[in-house]
Length: 111
Length: 114
Image (cartoon, rainbow over all chains, first blue to last red; front, top):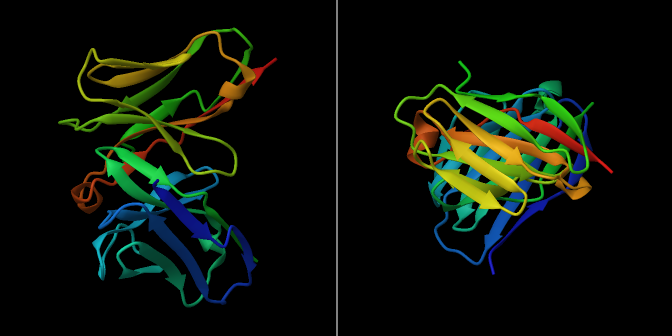
């Protein structure tokens, strides 16, 4: 069966600290992968997408970066967190046209 | 420029009280409109795909419809377990669309009281 795992589920980080969120997918190969952020009052915002290993496209300029070191692994990173990076981060893969399968999310609070 | 606007932002209904949620879109050449359900603290879950005006899809107490300017999610005789945030989405314009990314509305937070 197809599953998607995200970790950590929750984290609290000080401003200026680094960040690494990991997402892995099982039960599929060469998936299109996405990172979304959901902030209060802003809805879901597409941050990055990847169509293959080492291929990353950024949708908005920001303090974050993404990498795809393996076919089913997608990582979201930051060298120095800002307060505005707080939010609920969701990884997803494209299961079909318009059909994204989301992970459980990682809730980040930057203090 | 918002491509997808949902209304109302929040809706509180009594169990069994039917209603509709609205999703209006401004994209031209629509390549699909999609509905999702999101429970608190979880990722969105796919519900429906609509491609052309007049199309309808149903799942249990939910029915999604599409016109040339908007989509409705009708909920008939809702139960407390239908409480969730309902999101609509369209294919992203620009780079994200090339990889079938989606642009989401802000959602309607639906509460069904027993």
